[in-house]
Image 1 (cartoon, rainbow, N blue to C red):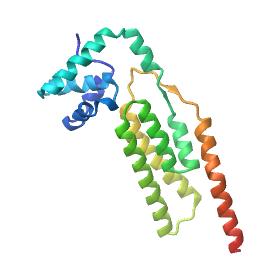
Image 2 (tube, helix red, strand yellow):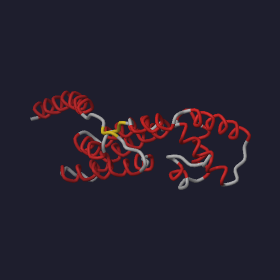
Image 3 (cartoon, rainbow, N blue to C red):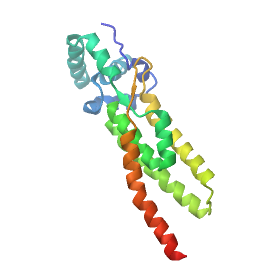
Image 4 (cartoon, one colour):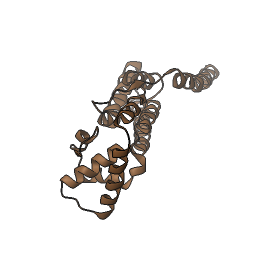
Length: 200
């Protein structure tokens, strides 16, 4: 059996610590990804009885599962598109777009990274608000540009490394997050307008 699968090329770029994360948190990732990480660790000379036991179990499941059904399962992964994530971030906030990125990561079986994505999005949004306030920047153009930058960086760091060139991803419907976003924004906008009217 050739020790390669969909995720093998991705594992080549990772260091030993990152590869061990797949083993130590195997329930958070696709079995094929965990197996590819174990194979890569073995190639680098890492020897561990627990890893050998898990490898044996995963390889046995891989042999038993029909290749055709596995390919179909991977092709059914639905993700929010890059363009929609950027648009969502500009309309609402970088933090809002980080939630979509986290949902994509959950679909890609990387729950640990999804939590980090939300934290990073929140930190970026808070820093963005703080700096614009401290520097007294009121230009909507600068606000949009910094939001674009934040969404782009989050996508490149969190999502792009998880995508596999051999897998076809379907675009997830965008109406639900848009509806939720606008429903949340309306009362906030009403409150701000009322406050401004009272101040005048």
